Image 1: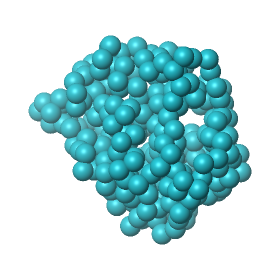
Image 2: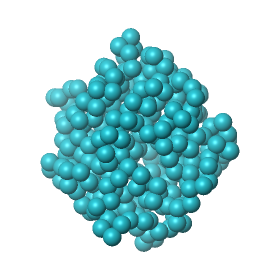
Image 3: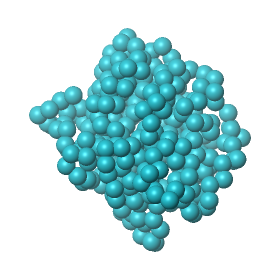
Image 4: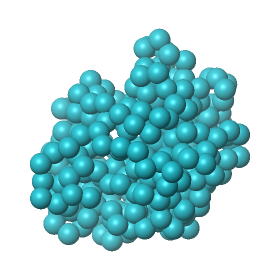
Length: 291
């Protein structure tokens, strides 16, 4: 696989996102194709801030993968390439997947700037195994990306595709925002772990049980939005179990122990086989309520 694996037949408007007459009614799993327009993609790294995010998450994902003795990794939510680049730099054999051609093009550019040529595949998760023809030690689905799936049937289909793409003893690492906190107590953010840019704000402008609409406002005045499905932590854990995954361990902001209302993000580590019961621990923080 190479740069040629990125199909450029997807031509989103350069700066204008496309919603229906009522943006709050746009709750489909294909919507991301119209949301990640080129203008938004070009500004995405301002939101992340690679250096600050690297410092915030430390070696967490590297440590988890190494604890499970995994080497061949499928990054199914590549975005602009942050985790693909970090894992490749750490010595993992990484294949980078995204449903947005614009995101993959940016990831390739970011990789080249750092002396890497990313192996990329442009694929929709719901048909993931049509685009990849191999089995992987681990799949990482990061950046709150799973919540772009608005339909339960799609979520179940995607987890089945992930399961099928893993080797018999593979692991899945999947993260999400702490939507429980958002739905039950309102939105707060430490602005510390995931979206670390200091010149952009990311906050919900609308939330109900089936939609979290976030607005991203940049210092130059550009604004973009994303419609996501606010999945609760235990719902995702249940879906993982029903998809066949076992021994699901959930971290809060990279910590093994936490109070449910504290983390901004949850990270689920799920095993395809109980034979992989190794030490998942990467970082521990003091708390009264472990998972």
